[in-house]
Image 1: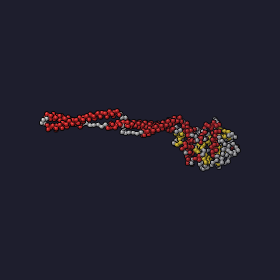
Image 2: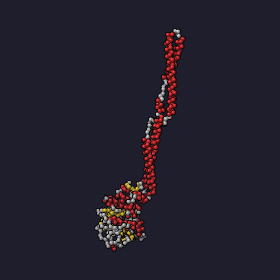
Image 3: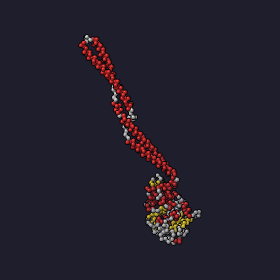
Image 4: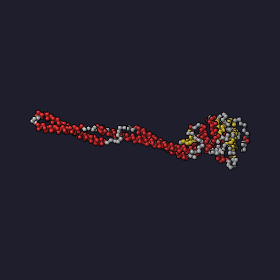
Length: 435
């Protein structure tokens, strides 16, 4: 069973004149009152009694007090703690008689339970480290966080390079009509020369046809001229007729050949030769754009792969936390900071911060079943009730202060005393065994 505070008597501590209280063993006990009436002094008295000299208030003696401070705390395990006398000497009575003094108290009193603000004001990293040490996964989680950060940083660099490559590829000019390979001017000239030779041969055949045609006409002219001399020139006529007939045969053959001839244009090649440098520039531009696009795609694929690795590491990290025995459902650690239900400390409500702090501090020393809470006026009544129910369900005891004199307060402190309480006995009644 964890140790609870069963009773407190305090006199002449800070603003306290004389206060006696018996807190509820579980749940929330609220010490209420207006400002400067001694509410916080009740918590300071408990912390001093149980925590030792390091919790001694700077101005421990009440102004105007005729007697020194006197503290007496009874714990649920039967241990009685008392500070009295001029030097506020400590006396710890153990019913088993095995141990005594501050050493006994240190075994079951968690210092942060006496000074919860120290935990609540710690850095996000310190809070997270405290939780990780409790559940025993600090080293494993730190390793995963380091791997995730390295992957994330690598992915960020890859994403930036990929974006630069993609932008550079988009800026490069592309020529869809350009050939895929650079053009050789020598090959184009050779093709042109072959066509020119072919065309020259065609022209020679055309010239031959022209010569034959001219010969035929000359023969015809001569035949016409000699027709008048036909009688005297029969032999010449026969010869010319033979020549004429031969020419006709040759003409017919040559005509058929020429009719089948087709000249090929060198205009396109001539233009290509003139534009070979421009074509090759376009080819180079297309190759550069294609290379840039390939690089951008490669970086995009690497970015995606790194994203999947980060997801896997985060899943492993989540599994690690989910498998841990957490002090409070919903607690976690993200990027080295404590979280609760996905919210970082600065984003939590005041009541959630108290709940988280209480759960973690309780786990630091399970034998300590209580916690002291100051300034609980930040909670509305509904939240107070919910917080109290949670404390009861957890078997925890919380003694808290609140600037209020309402019905939610179990005890009201007024001018250093419990309101409506009977006057305390004379100082001589504060002796060992008075409880």
